Image 1 (cartoon, helix red, strand yellow):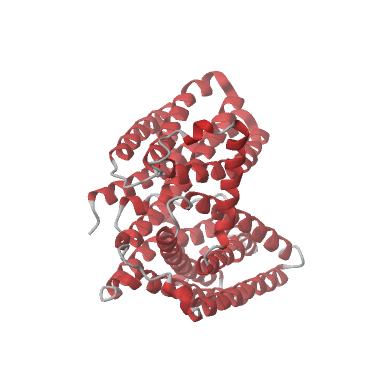
Image 2 (image 1 turned 90 degrees about the horizontal axis):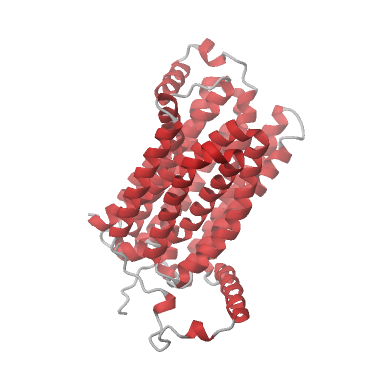
Length: 466
């Protein structure tokens, strides 16, 4: 049973992600309307570049200063940006919205290493997997729900009403985060002999060099633990070779489906797909966009399934609670392999299926695969939160976030190149080959993961008194 502190943390995480996505959507839509396409596109590029630097800074601060203060500060910065929205729309125009858009991107980048380092300071070790599970589920729901909520509020009421709603939400979130109980000993305060005077004696040059040294130590921390290295490799496979399918490959396949094919089929599956579209409110102007949105909906359902799997794993580990992370990682990684196989099969025979069957199968497989990916991520997070020291978690998280973003970009470019080599049949074949490479890499990961007895011992939870 989760404590009230854990429930408050999960609620704060969901609310914070919802608020940031709601505000980002509001500013981007308004920027597109006021500033035009050029400013809109430039703002996204500028935000991505600045986020990389902010994540490194946030990781460094997370390792050295109070988690609770940084956690509250991130939300307080969101609150200030909401206040800046009120005059910027009326008086600042496109440039002011451009700056606020980057600001929201930076606050999210700042908050990620902080919030992902929080669970060990908020809940007991045996509750880490549950909290990580709900955190991940809430993140996915909030990201998809927020744009819909803004569209409704903006169309029914007004942009100013959306800003007022955000203001109230941010004030509430600051209050919730301030009330959290956080067991934390920041590195800056952990040395009693220093008396807080060590930093005063350092010159400006020494302080700058110390910052670069700590960032470099954060980068090298990625290779300090062999098992964590294996798990990072597994997640790189997911981000580089699997997730780009949804944004790059599926739209190409769906675009080749003739308009009206689903409606004309009249099969049980086609009727189920049309009903699901109506229930989810998916009404894009072009049919292929509807199909892509529907398959993406499977990715939203996935986190709910992963939460159920986590509770099953909790039950399986009751007799050996110290092995819960080991069991969870095995279920997750083996599940990733088992769900990758039907995805390869569906993609290989994509042209043999009717339109309704193809979309339905991809919806089911993509949902199941997302669920097992989430299970792996949940127990990967639980393991690193137990394994890494308080003084290195922030930089570690900042670096893997940057690594995964880079991997996703490289994977998108690889699939983009594969899709430019011929017709639809060639596109599907080349994409399937890339997925087969992902399957082989996953098999290597699971072999290394299961055969290294020394690394396996690092996953077993030990009493800190031992």
